Amino acid sequence: MPKEVVLDSSVFVSAFVKGDKFRSAALRVFEKVFLGQFRAFASVIVPVEVCGVIARRAGVDEAASVKRQLDKWESMGFIVCVELNKRRGREAADLALRLRLRGMDAMVVQVARERKAALVTFDEEMAEKSRGAVEVSSFQDFEK
Image 1 (cartoon, rainbow, N blue to C red):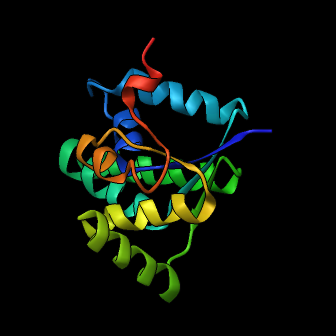
Image 2: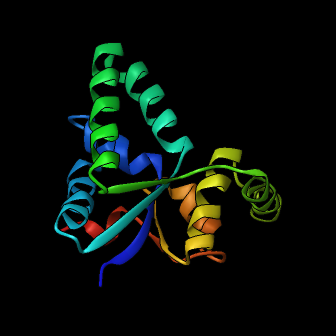
């Protein structure tokens, strides 16, 4: 049975940006997803964040290509995007207050808590703040 994981934007960005210092770790994460070892979830806000970062770093054309790839992975079932609703929003707000997380980070952690899944993030601050609330894996866990 595959391990359920919730992927943060940082993992996607590292996978898509050539030269990113965590790219090899991110590619190992996605290898586990594509091999069926991980069942990947993400908050519905993650693709929005990823496209914004890619557009700023690599340009709009590259971001549009990434958006198409993310849509394809979702349609193929490799990634499940969890919708935001009032209950999830309230729970994320509580996490933001308690853990002192940025709002978008709290939304991602909320999905991990709800799914009882491991959070995979390469954002060290987010990882540190989230450790008491959810299981956390960072880039070190995917280095060879």
